[in-house]
Length: 226
Length: 226
DNA sequence: TCAAAAGTGTTAATAGTACACCCATGA
DNA sequence: TCATGGGTGTACTATTAACACTTTTGA
Image 1 (cartoon, rainbow over the protein chains, first blue to last red):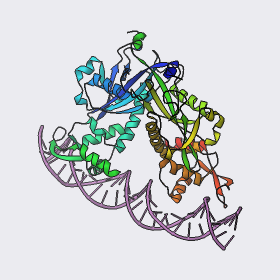
Image 2: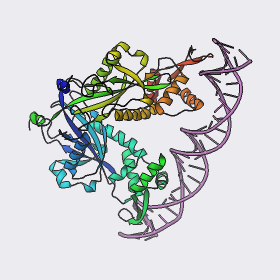
Image 3: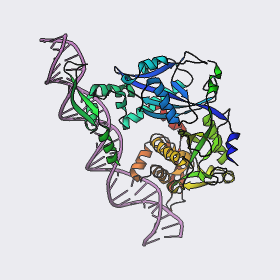
C-alpha cells in the first residue's frame, strides 16, 4: 500500500472548544459566546474554532483563546475529544475540548465584546449548545482533580493575592466550603507561596497580607519530589 | 451564514489508536501490531484505524478492538486526542487514543495473528511508531489513577482469580510492590469481591481461594456512596 | 521432610478534620 | 466603640504503612 492508502478514508471537520475559567468576587466564571453563525445562531456556546491545516491541536486552542481574549501564554489542558456522529446538528464535527485558566483582568474586553462573549457564573450557567454542557462538566471535574495536586489556581488570580481570595477560589472550584485554619496551614507548608510585605486594604479595614506564587520555588519543589 | 459555513474549513483524517492491556504470568502486556502498510511498514505500532463517516469516536475504538481480538464489551477509556501537525509522517492524521483492558484468554489468536499482532511486556516495549509511545505512557498514567478509585482491574483477570493474582496485577500496573497483608485487608473491605468455595491449585500445593467480582454489589456500593 | 506459596493482626506514623477566639482598623 | 474581615493552635479521628510467622500439601 502507498501513502495514498490514507485517501481511502473519510475526512472530518475538527474543532477545538474552550472552557474558559475565570474568577471574580468569590465566584468561578465561564466566558461564553452567543453563537455568531447558523445553525443555532444566538444560542450560548463555548468559544470554539476549526483547526487549520498547518496547526497543532494545542495551537488551535491557544489561537482561539487568544482571538477572543487577546491573552497569550494561558494555562490550558486538554479535556478530551468529543465525536458522536450527531453532536453538531449542522455537520459532522469532531471537537477537542480544552479548559483554560485565566486572570479576568487581563482579558481584552473590547475584543471579547466583538465576539459577543460574556462571563457567566459557573453555578448558574444558561443552557448550552450541543454537548458543551458535558464538556464543561468534564473540564470542571479535571480541574478539581488538577488543583488538588498542582498549584494551577494562581493562573486565575492577580500576581498578588490574599489567602482569603485563594481560599474562595478553591471553594468555588471544589464547590464546598473549606476550613480557614486548615486551609492556611496547608498553604504555609508550600514554600512556593510567599508572603510579601504588601497589604491589601480593599476588603477589610485591618488589611490582609498579600502573597505571591514563586514559580522557581515550585520547580525546585517538583525536582525535590522525584 | 448558512450551514455551508463549515465547508470553508479544512477536513482531516481522524483515527483511533488502541492501547490494549492484558495481564499474564505476573506481567502487564500490550497487544502491538507490526504496521501492515506504508509508510513505516513493519514498525511496531498500536492497533489503530480510521473513523468512519457514520461512526461515533467511541464506536470506532470498539470496532478496531473487535476486529483485532474478536471481543465485544471491552472496558475502554479515552486517553486523549493527539494532533501535532507532523505526528504521522505519511499524512496529517488526528488520532484519538483509547486504552482497553481485556482478558488475554478471550482473544481470538487466529484473528490477531492475521493482523500481525503480538503481546509485548509493558516493561520491555520495543520502539514504537510516531507518538505511540507517548500514548502508552499517558494511558498507563490514566490507568494508574483509575485503578486506585475503581475496580477496573477485573477486566483483565479470569472471572475466578486468587488474591495473589489480583495483587500481582496491581503491582504490575502501579509499578511498585505492595504489602500483602495491607493489600488483602483492603480487598476484604470491598463487599463486591466475593470469596468462592473454589480453590486454585495451579500455583501452590496448598491451594489458594478463588474470588469473584460481583458487579451487582459494586453498583450497590456506588449508589451507597452518593 | 521440606520447599513453596497461602494466609493472617497489631502497632506506629501520618494525614486529615473539627473547632473558637483575639486582632487591627476605619467608619 | 463597634462592625468587619484577618489571623492563629490544639486535640481527635481516620487512614496508611510497616512488619514476621504459621499453615498446608505435593513432590
